[in-house]
Amino acid sequence: MRKPLLLLLAITLLLGACSRVGLAYRNLDWLIPWKLGDYVVLTSEQSAWLKPQLQEHLAWHCSVELPRYLDWLQRSQQALSSRDSELMADQLSEFEQAMQRIAVEITPSTIELLRGLSPRQVEQLLASLDEQNAKLREEFLEPPLPEQISRRAERMEERLQPWFGNLNTEQRERVQRWAEGLGEQNQVWMDNRLAWQQALREALEVRRGDDFADRMTALLQQRERFYTSAYQASYEKNRQAMAAMIVDLVALADSRQMARADKRLQSLHSDLAAQQCQAGESVVSR
Image (cartoon, rainbow, N blue to C red; front, side, top):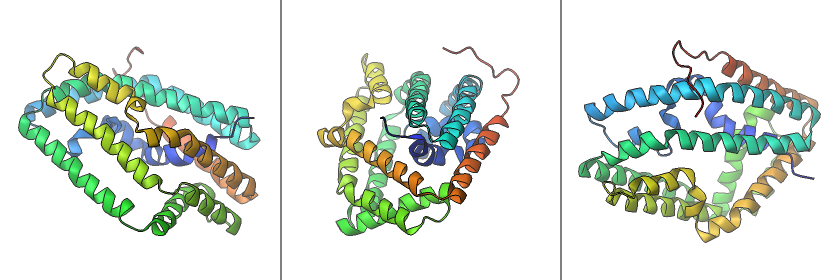
């Protein structure tokens, strides 16, 4: 039987996005993989060009994807209530498909924006990435491994808290075992991040070239092509480890915790349903 994956999705994927659902729908630039505006100062001309592009993406997202999300959340709530493992597993596949559709949607405008960056802007972008990587190394790699594991468990408990409330002793122990099982995953994750960024750097060097669009399309839509061997080897294993942990946490949850998780899904559904596409935002799915 396939592992139940609903709460894995809800906790690790929806938490960051849907807890700020209103903001996300008004500022779709959070969907661009590296949120370019956080890394480089755009010229007034670039900003003026980007604004209608983002509005178009927003219109597509609101009119095409929003109804799918509402249906997804409703079925997720049913799966949670019944603890239907088959339905829960299907939910994961649908969410991954949604992320892929978003990647496809934003690829053309992202290519166009990056193609037009000046040498100075590219330097600024790469320097910003280097600065962020240094901070990530300090936070995730410099502490000794036992401390990395402890912090990993703490972060997971923080993500679970809005869904389950305070974890009981057995649940905290299960989270700790999961954190220990990942071992030196922080290093594997960082190496993979740097590998993707190296491919981005190489693409930006030839951003005026004929193959730039193909390079960026692969980077945005086929990220698995750039996985390191270690990351590729651990990806499915870690995904299953997360799923197994969530399955156990649900099994260890009392009625109060399950009611809380159900209520949170209801709240997310209500928040999404309240988002109204403005007149003229409806677009044909493509």
